[in-house]
Length: 413
Ligand SMILES: Cc1cc2nc3c(=O)[nH]c(=O)nc-3n(C[C@H](O)[C@H](O)[C@H](O)COP(=O)(O)OP(=O)(O)OC[C@H]3O[C@@H](n4cnc5c(N)ncnc54)[C@H](O)[C@@H]3O)c2cc1C
Image (cartoon, rainbow, N blue to C red; front, side, top):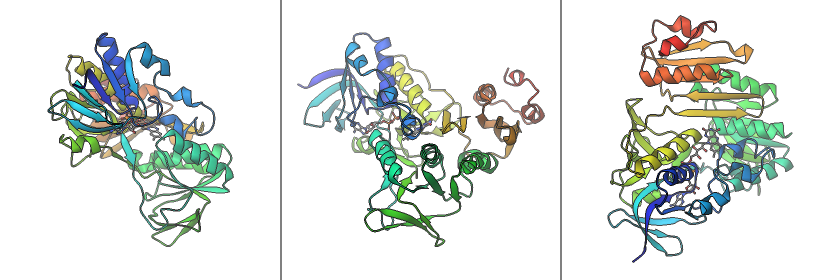
């Protein structure tokens, strides 16, 4: 008979590592195995486009737990180990190398994979995607040799990487489908603020452009767009979003979310099979707070959901009700925080203005807060979180929301 484990955690990222810690807090004797495909212990990805890419932080700084934590806490960490298949009825899993383990409960936290752009020239050298340490190392090494780097994508990965590379002295140009950087999430006005910050540091933008090819002989030297524009650069970094990694879950017959991608979960993060849970980028759950299904790719959500899954797996079931939180830094030129997500909104209320570099934007839908962006106004974000959670109708309170002199605390009370 294969070894029987109380908790099998599949995936070696933020969600699994936090689940392991929570389980150990709640169940001092339970056996825990954490199996992750990457050779490293679980680490945080945000530094890969920020301080780690700029050479300001070391690898170890990004580890979720000290490498010794796993042994000290009797967690069987299997780094560099793919979970090849899962039998949800028999409660067994096959690990890379042929070992079979049997388990009581499992977490699937397999994260996401980058979207690859399969256009002409896609196989050229010096075209990079960013998800893991090695990608960040390679981008930095190629950027150091490059006269100019082209970033494809105007979302946070493209903007953060451009800021980091430019801060390190390499010229950058961003080619993007949207007219204004970061506007898909934050709207055009806020997007113009962030784009302006990047432009003021010399980053060039080509908005409203769809990539059709990479050009070059052996390595990329330019990208070509549908409108016929050629943007030169001797290294390319693509930030074109991610797809949740549902390969294992799909093969195991777990229900998947056709609309949002991800593994379909109930409000407690349990999948369609009892005793099997999902968390992080791969988890599509019923959000009681939003009254809809939700899947987001945020560092904080992976952490919170990992902790929550640990709680539920240790027999303390409860709905997951944390409002998703996101942050991003553009070198040390600007940083933002956000709660939401507001998929759509019909009104923006600005508190403070972009010129001052300190503002919050409340995104309202039918008079209720659907999201909030903060630049140097974290205290407003906290209020927005409460307003969103409680579903407070603020349609006749927009003057207070927009007045930096008003105390917002009473609105959420
Ligand atoms: C460069 C970068 C910068 C980011 N910056 C920010 C930021 O500023 N703010 C923010 O909120 N979010 C940011 N994010 C997003 C955030 O890092 C993710 O939301 C978070 O890492 C998700 O954690 P996870 O545990 O769900 O998945 P992951 O971190 O993707 O971990 C999943 C792991 O499981 C492994 N795996 C997959 N299948 C198997 C299998 N069958 N067997 C074993 N292992 C498997 C994968 O290889 C991976 O190592 C950033 C992401 C990147 C890439």
